[in-house]
Length: 612
Image (cartoon, rainbow, N blue to C red; front, side):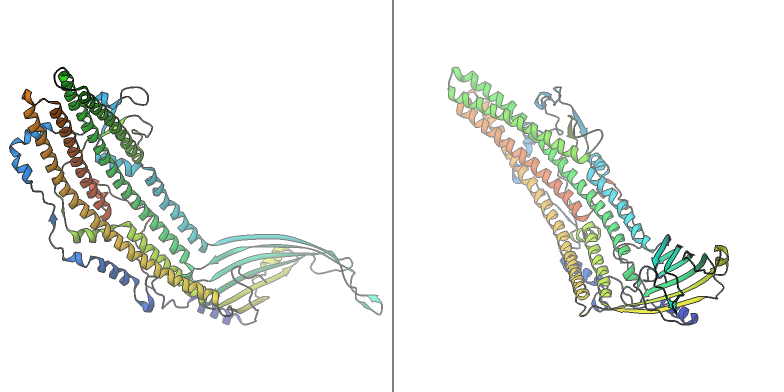
């Protein structure tokens, strides 16, 4: 007697078909009332409330921030005092033009092919767009939603119809015990036959836990025992079978049986969120690398300027060696110029390295990593004021950060696994029901025609109970699932705190960076005034002493240092703004890039609950 493949054997009991069909119908129509969303907590309390409380706890203070703020810039006393000489001080300041404009071709040296070093301009918007389109990390992440979508189909396919077929042949030729009456044999001493078995049909698992089998079969028995005749010979026995099995406790319900599908869908949504996170990360990395390249070019310009003005001082000392300059002073000037030449080489190498790092992020066909061309940024390091609302930025970050959606998916996964684990604690009680029709004939067509004539009908109805003594294993798994869910909730709270911290850190970096721009600008203006005052004295021949020229060397270097610090503060300010955009999840919006979430459908998000 064949049964569906998905359940253990059940004891056979006879009964009328009305009782059998009524019982099966009752199981199929069992209500699913009482099912709760996986996001419900103990006692039916939604876990969503726990998460809302975690968010409210972190943004409670931010709600008091009602008016937007703007970073303020007020000219320092030094700048106000020297305002009349501003143009002259700007002329003395190195690297005052567009990025890279003052770098001499000879300063860039030769490329790796031995030719003149070529340079290509690239603006920041184009760089970000190329990176989020072509970056290899983004391309890998872009494939993952499609991969996980196939996993969803694979999980859903468990409930597809299964077509099966089987065929076998059995050859029997064995000795047999001979029965006799008064010494006369009445049974043969050999039992020989050949039997063929054929079956085909459909199996189907249902998401409420049941399994159905429809089977058609044919058995052919060819008697080959010497001296024994059977009728019919060969015998053709056709059969039709309808079987159904249903777990009544453990394994019952849509939530349990569709758990793998729900987990696969969460993974697909997670991969989409990870794709968005990858694009946001790449956008920020490109911005940081781009501004690092800007700074590298500016340092190269400043280093080149130091060489130029240092050569002028060295030549003056060379001319005064016939008067009052000692050889040691001239040698010191020569050494300083050579040191500045070495600094130019280091700065040039820094430009090359920063350009290559940016190329690696872009993965652009026109700017490959193997190309020897140098990227020259076109952006200027202005210090525009930044207006922000702490409350709005925190709310935006909590609403948009993909890391929070990923943490929420972990909570949902843990809740789904807890439902399965709680169901696994129940004892196993399975219902088996089966009805079959049989017919015997001396040919296949005769047997098949009469199989459903209800002359030979068999019924089976059974229950199987199973429960481990002590039930320690399932209860341990259930306790583990509860702890994992609590762990996932703690992780969500932690991610909320990290998101808020990212916003605060970026805002503080912006404010500090803006203040540093003012401070370093004042420092640079003051150093430019020091150099200007020294150059005014230099116009009188009496001032051209070796000590004076050494002081000029020092003033040049302090001005160069101040200029580099000014550039650094402007770069860090811009990078802090980029970090804030990443902290709020709006890096792509700044460049008009719309994130298209592939592989998601309405109603399949992690916060979606189901009304049972």
